[in-house]
Image (cartoon, rainbow, N blue to C red):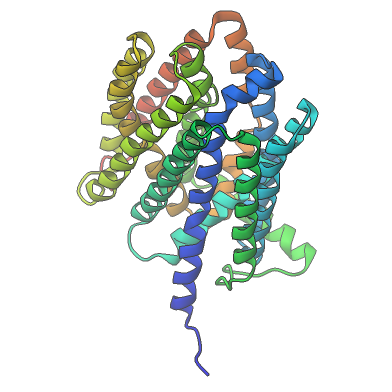
Length: 392
């Protein structure tokens, strides 16, 4: 009877876990294309959209820290499998929701499941792969972008066919739940220390948090990640802006989002090669300077063609930031789950999405999105020069 070695187990687990962001991105970008339609059907304001997205974000903030902590001590197949099944249920609920209240519950289910699924998948991949952690995360990010392209084009094709979007959401939910079942049936390598007693478990969590909070390099990368996520807040309104201000149809919107993801995919692919010779600090600096010019041009230059032409280099530059910061934050600490938990907890402090929605209702969507993006880019550039090492 053949036995499975630890290395074979790690490879199988990493392959299945690396699909976590792929699946999540299909669902996320499919929903991004559908948000303008959902807004129209339910008659939602910018503030109401921001409330829905905030519910999703806070549900994610409530489960992601605990998911990160237990990923260091509990069997990971249960975290991944249950999260994927819950994500599928939330996706199907969006397609079936007849009222705003049920829609809000569905968004909460998405947030509660999405964070633990993605983050635990990252941890499994980084710890299962030999070599550069950043390169491993970059490969996962490329899978994520491929999923985003598929999700966008799938919705565009579906809408063009004339079939209602509700059925698509239900089908995507069922497929995601099946992926979760596959995860539950797969053996994953055990985390470094499996804790069964409640007292030992909470003592271990406190010690892991203390280790992370005492590590200055890890905290620097976590601050960088937090600024990145705040800067990314306008993304929840981008689809609405492209329909309302950019005059795109929902079908063309899906094509545009897929086009941007293809450009981002190219950027992440090249990043995995550039990291062999170029320190992360230089990559962050160059891309931040580029975005300081590209962001205002994307908003201000009129025409759909201009949106495509400027959106490609912008997506290319934007794709460089997250793989570097995410990999370095995990790589610099011996407690990657605790790093994920701290990163998630800091997201609860500022209700960024809700504040942006209220800001957009008062000063306009274009102005609010541009202000946040420019301020965030400037902060990233400052952090790169202030704290990050000049070499690897």
